[in-house]
Length: 294
Ligand code: FVH
Image (cartoon, rainbow, N blue to C red):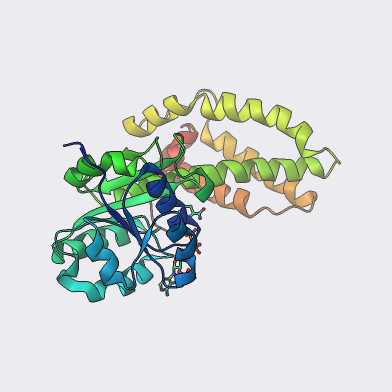
């Protein structure tokens, strides 16, 4: 059911992100109550029309929808556990970064408090909050997401709901950020290698963009299909050949005095995949060793 009037919202935690969230709510006209450990961070928001709660309890009592955005889950529990059934009947949206396991534990904990729980992950920086392209991920109570979707979209127009498992938002968030970090690292390693011949990163980027967008991103659908099928055709570049190539790459990095740790790790993963029977398979077969906890 969609909102018909603007829901009053409380925001607990007014760091860079919590302040941006509260600002977005105020701009949209929501009655907004705020609380922060260091009270001075509420001053600017108070000038914009926020009500200042003196305690966490007061903040929770002020609104049916409570957003918490503090440094980590331990702090979130330190602040909210003492409330007990003081949280009953509230919708708690936890935008504090945590692991999927912590999110699931928080979902179970909230149920004991008779609180409806939505976990969220923010793929945006504070200045992006409130923009149509800002992407926040949510999982947990579907009913709560549907009831408050319009309010939650105040934070980011591109926000999405991923399912009832409270851990899903964090799982997607960490998976997407891992893809980002690894792609970024690949470019940095390449730039470092050509840099040993005084080639600047800008010149390297001209070629790297084509390889990354054409070969890596261009083939992503096919790679995903192979992962889902559990079948990894090699496309004339079998893994055993690629493992030998990687050894040469490691030697090249070593010869030029550059860090080899990530490549060595990739080579180890590739060797284990070959040893497990995928010598003739394609690169996507690495997923089978990645899935193993070593
Ligand atoms: N800022 C960002 O770019 C990222 C984007 C992705 C998601 N994160 C996550 O958002 C959570 C909050 O991050 P933040 O940027 O607001 O962080 P800070 O500015 O450092 O504010 C931290 C807030 O936590 C409060 N806090 C810390 N320790 C305690 C404590 N022991 N008791 C009560 N509150 C505590 C702190 O209060 P204060 O220091 O101002 O009194 C701030 O309200 C985080 O999970 C990011 O991973 C942001």
